[in-house]
Length: 339
Image (cartoon, rainbow, N blue to C red; front, side, top):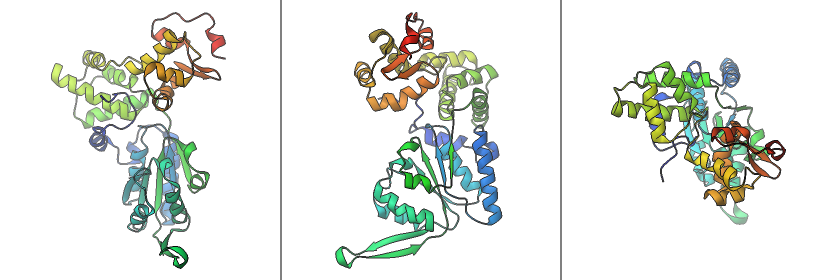
């Protein structure tokens, strides 16, 4: 199945691109000003006390820069960084092996931390609070616990679903920051910076065209920039111009709001099959051949954020903006449906 170019989740091709374009210092990180200010104070205070920075939890939608911030924190603190994820830690021994190999001040970055299982969490509690690892030796009545001291380190956790973290784990983070969707101006600056790093010529209007379709997400902006660059090299002179971007949007079937064919299919199903709604998500999933979880986690957040879709107690309803975007007349009782 072809990967959606406007999906915020990481594609296989994104890893090398992210490493190339990822800012290495806080001053080079564009956007998220409040988070940056708070992190700067947190890290500077830790440096003055000659201590590792306290445990940090970053949450927000995919592609907003949580992993990038974790690497920046490690660099700013002159610390090493180990990277893992919740799904990768299946046994207590997996986590124990990582923890016992950390050095003082190191950063342990755990992506998708909400997917840690209960056994792993219980190993993590004393490690985060007391910098100690409890190891069970033997089985049955003869089993005994051995406590190993760990060097003081920092866990940076990242999640797209902070509500799924257990309260005991969430409470052990000293600082929690939410990453918001970016403003258009910040995305334009990110696209401009990325184009310079990729050594590709652009004009301001083309940069804006890419930024407008990025769904306010840096990962998508960089991915679209790469697609436009490919078209510029094959169909043009190598420079990114507005005509080249227009060719790219036609090929990708991405409109000026960053909606692709799947987004529009969901909106059209609500409007044309279910008369604009309200319609339950299970019924909508059946009509569009998409999974309920995919609609709720992947498509709906952006459609709601852009004002195309609204959740009501009775189900999903397409808004007036959705009708206008699809060049369809809104029903006269639309406001009552949205209540």
